[in-house]
Amino acid sequence: MRWHKRLLVAGIAGVVALAASACAGGQVRGAGGTPQPSTGGTQATQSTENDATFVYAPNLDVVTDWDPATSYSNEIIAMTSIYEGLTRYDAEAKEVRPRLATEWSSADEGKEWTFKLRQGVKFHTGATLDAEAAKKAIERTMKSGGGAAYIWSAVDKIETPDASTLKFTLKYAAPMDLITSSGYAAHIYDAEALEKNEDDVKNGKLDAGTGPYTIDSWQKGQETELTLKAFDDYWGGWRPEQYKKVAFRVTPEITTAWQLLQRGEVNFVQRLNPQLFEQAGMTEGVQAKQTPSFQNLLVLFNTAEGPTKDVRVRQALQHAIDYDGLVAALKGSAQKAGGLVPPGLLGHTTGMEPKQDLAKAQELLQDAGYGPDNAELKLTLTYAQGDEDQKLLVTLLTAALKKVNVTVEARAMAWNAQWDRGKKGDQDIFVMYWFPDYADPYSWFLNVFRSADEVSFNLSYLKDEAIDKAIDGLPQLTATDQLAADQAYADLQKKIIQDEAAVAVPYVQTYQRALTADVLGYVDNPAYPNVVSFYDLKPAS
Image (tube, rainbow, N blue to C red):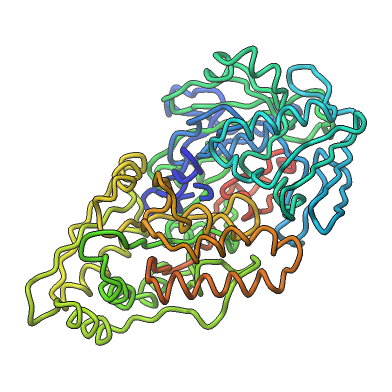
């Protein structure tokens, strides 16, 4: 996200992987309350006022990095309840909403931004939020250079005209109201407290946020890995009926999570396979929720070396994917993609929906010296261990390519191992999910397709100066001329997908959640993948 964020992308047995943060990676497991001898796990509590526990059942370990400056992984599902940014994106309204800032304005054609801070906000450390504290947090994140710190790259300087005012002067125009809503690296925190207590932060014994919840306990590697408790002095206040405690019960197997949900031992399962989701919709005591997401699947081709260095081979691979068959088999948990940018974001295109064409694939392979009448072509591919959706893609692609004398040596891997291998550039095809750091498509282009001396998520190894230059101009266009930005995104997608054939994009995920029926107020926000806004929920009386 980015384990790093992209762990979220790896997924598990029919579960949507969430990364780079974006988006590549796996998904989180587990949530719970008090251990129960009968199950060895935790029990969701919804009985007495003020002690209700919301139990989240992710499928992978929750926390990889407790530092709000560099966190870029699965912990987004907990960190967004502990830390807050200046703004928050409302995906339903498609608007940026106030958070720690109550109002903001821009000047100098988007190169100056002024934010007014909310009054009466306390950090969990007891310190009071003011402009100087917010400035120190942002500057510390910028200095770290880790995770999604790149979101602040437009910032030239930050000033504090008074205790409630932050003024940003930018090197170039950028949509700072949107950037400050990012799920990663936009957190405002007590930087002084973190720097003085680095070991306690690293070990999950201290947090320095302003959010409604604070760390109660963290037991790395345990089934109930993490519990959060209400921060009594939260600026938003508390009502008696709200959940005062949240537990994350790590549950790798989707069938186990489903059983726990039916028994009321967990309240939320972030992803079910199509069969279980259909069953959830017909099960008493369970509510099934379905929401379009900003998360898509990327099939990245090695443009730098090996047989896929030939653009004809990459184009053939694009034509070999059974896009319609894949989406049909996923039974509502995915929609066919139309380019790199999912619907609902600036830059989404129409008319780029891919189609399988095995005759064209064979023709392209023949031109490249492969195909049925030539020597067998062998390709290596890696994908996320435990992700049934990715496994289905690989199965269909392997079968289709076999018909044209291409053998795919596919290997399912844990995300960290897959990512480490990908950075070495020693495989032909790399499969991963991606989602944006904030509700804008820039993350796909900057992180995945802009060239870099040290490969991180540019796992197609694409190097093109014209593409780099166009990517670098996207933030300023977005801030000053959205029509031009929309066209720039469309042009880049055609260049990357059609001309360079660096990637195939089979589908955009549709989030399919299951909750116990007594949870009220749940709304999915795809701008924050797999995040539950626990503060907005309450158990039915």
